[in-house]
Amino acid sequence: MIYHDYAPIYHAAGQAAFGTALAHTILAHLPTPHRALDLACGTGAAALVFAVAGATVVGIDRSPAMLAIAREQASQRGLAITWIEADIRALPDDPQLTPHSFDLCTCLFDSLNHLTGDDDLTNVCRAVGRLLRPGGHFIFDLNTLAGFRTWHEYDQVIFDGRDLLVVNRLHFDQQQQRAYGRFVWFQRRGERWWRGEETHCERPWSDDEIAAALAAGELLTVARLTPEWTPAASDAPRVVYVAERRGAA
Image (cartoon, rainbow, N blue to C red; front, side, top):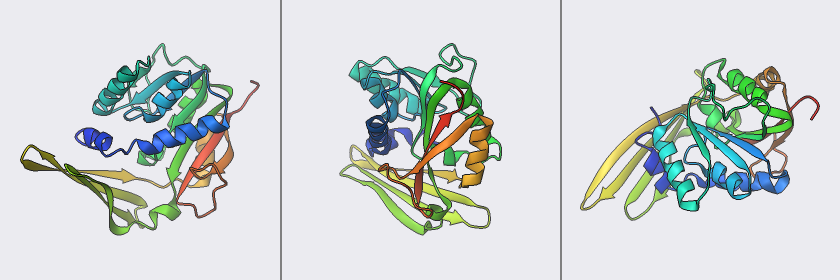
């Protein structure tokens, strides 16, 4: 499973910073939600921001290693967040997941790109539509096809510190329409360095595919933005989608 051995490296390298920043941006442009759901919450970056702002928060992730870090982060801050270990494509029957009870649902840092099955995005959107109240928002960001086309076999240095080096080799298979990030890290423990490696596969989703998946959950895109919350160009490498649950609020 991805994000198992890599979970503490992800945390140490500060990769949660993107989710933290985007969560703050969301709160700067939308009312603070009463209840917020963070899908593929990872180490809890966005969930922590929403909880500090006063929301009741549920975070869901399928990686126990990532959730362990999220729980520790929440405990250190004295925040009561509900964490659920589950695959976002098949959410469990849980009393914390009451239909139409959330004002906001997020899925950040290109998590939905990791869904590569044809029905995966639709399944997630149906679940979100069931959980959001009418008028509630589903906000997620995606790497776009235009962005993936720039992944020409180059190494991206994620973190370079005294005791840790993390490099991501990026590659896009145009024929298969799959993008690969090969994370390689070197971590010093005592006098020795240890090497680890994990490969992540992502899929580009077109605007038409996104619209169809959202419609299955009675959701409608109301904005297509950059992470800085400005209108996204057609060739933007990453897009933040703001969708709204249809129906009377």
